[in-house]
Length: 359
Ligand code: PHE
Image (cartoon, rainbow, N blue to C red; front, side, top):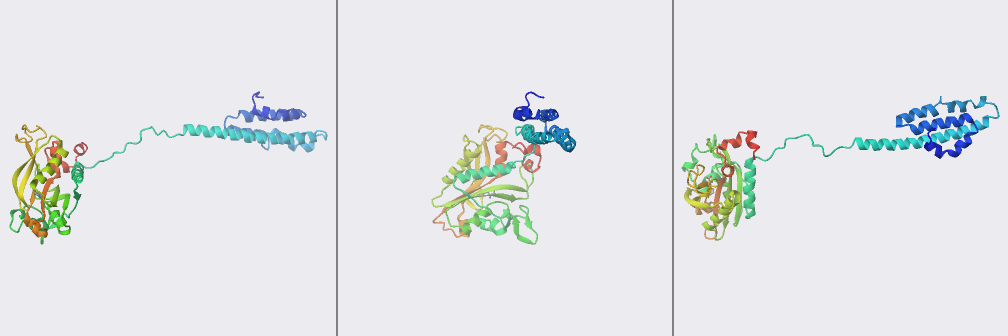
C-alpha cells in the first residue's frame, strides 16, 4: 500500500480495527491504494467499479454474511460496513480533488490567447474627395461658418435667374448643363451657388455658411468630369469688404496647403459677384519660382470669388444699405489634385484600388 496514501493517514484508526478481520483490512488497503493513485476521473471511476461495484470483493463479502460462521458475522457486518462507508467517503473526496485538477488543466489549456493576431479583414476608408471635403469644412467651421445644403436637382430660377444670370446668358446654354426633357426649368445644378439664394431667402443676416455638394456640367477631359464637387462660401454682415474676403481665403489657403503659401487676386467675372476675382495660391511644388505644374508662373488658380452683387440681394430682399457680403466657390477635386500633386481628375472616379488606397 502506498505509504503516502491519504487514506492510510485518514483512516489509520479504522485500519487498525479492521485488522480484526484480515481479509477486510487487505481489501480496504487495496481499494484505498487504487483510489489514491487514480490519475484522473476516468481511472477513479474504474477503481470505484472494481472496489465498490456489485461484483467487488467487498460487496461479495458483505453479501456472503448469512453464509459465514456465526461468530464471524457480527465482525464482518460491523467492520465491513464501516469499511464501505469510509471508502465511499474517500472516493468522494478524491473525486472532488481530481475535478479540481481537471478544471485547472482545462483553464490552462483552453485559454484564449488574445495576443494571437486575428483573421485579417480588409478595412476601407473614406474616399480622398470625402476626406478633402471634410478637411475644408473643418477649416471653415473653425472660422465660424455653418454648413448648409441644397438640392442637386435644381430649378432654373435658383441656379441662374436669382444669381443675376438672366435668360439669354451664355451660361444657360443647353450645352453647359443637363436639363430635364419636357421640363426646361428643371436641371442638375451646375454650381453650389443656388444654396446662397435658398439660405438668404429663409434667414436674415448675418449669414456665414459653406455649402458642399455635387454639381454637374457637360464637360469631360483630364481636368473635368461631368459630376464633381464644390464648396460654396457666403458671408453677409455689416461692413464686409474685399479685404475680409482676402483675409478669409488666405487663412484657408495656409490651413489647407501650408503656412508658407500666399494668395493673390486676379480680376474676373461672375454674374452674381461684383467685383469678381479669381484666387491663386503660390505654387506648392516650386514654392513660387516657376515649374511645369504652375506653367512657370509661380501661381495656381484655386477658386472663384467676389463681393455679392447688389442685384442678388435684391432677389432675397436684403437691404443693400445695411449689409454687404462676399462669396466664393471652389472645386473639391481641384483642391485635392493640387494638394496631392495629381494630374488626371478622372482617377478619382475610376475606382482603381491601387490609386484609392494611397490616400
Ligand atoms: N459658382 C462659381 C463657379 O462655379 C464659383 C463662384 C462662387 C464664384 C461664388 C464667385 C462666388 O464657377
